[in-house]
Image (tube, rainbow, N blue to C red; front, side, top):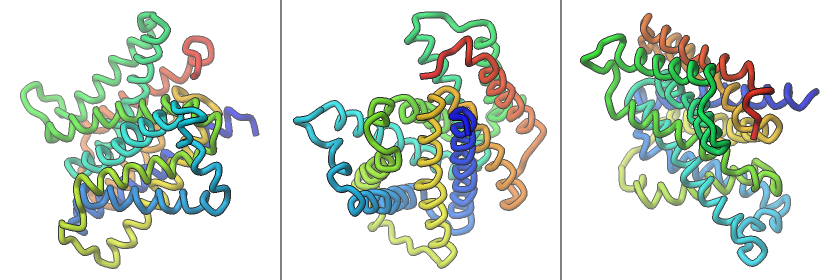
Length: 304
């Protein structure tokens, strides 16, 4: 299978897993009364322990190699930025946005990341956006406007905090998609994911202290945690980041359209979340933006 096709399949598969995980998160918040500050640290810790535990028995020397400051101190710094500012903050902001709105809204706001990656590439290449790129930016802004205001110029259809956390979440996607290129050339992607999850799990556990919240999950809550850990963390990130290695961060972010599609369908059909005409128009604007950016990437915007 050609690398481009394989990379596309991997990134879309990972994105679909995120969509499933997001809907499960919405279920846990609305039906099981979980809080994102309780769920995310536990989710990250469990996923990190699973992946790091696997590599500890498989090749423990390789597992600890990124932390060898004498050999290359930059690897440890890159891993800290990737794990904390990228993967872990993305996880928390994504689930917080779901808790404040719906899985569909959270995923479509997160999928503003291709536009942000485009802007980063333009800055790196010291050039202005091309006409089709400007059109894609305008489409992204129009999509966000329709989703968040439902056409009103005087009020928001979602909570302002949800809009803020969703947009910042898209920024963290840029970090974890573009930052680890050097690390991925040296180490297996799932191993890097394990460290990223473990770092975030420890940091957010110390920050939020979920053991003091007094929450006790039901049997369905435990099943939901297993789904978001295995499907939403271990499987989703490993598939997506493996695809990034093959096709680059910009193309990979474009194929992540599978996430909002999956989340919107499941959120509406299974969880009964409202989906209005304005939401549909906003989704269409974002999807057209993704299609517009993906068509000329081979000749106009080189992949990283």
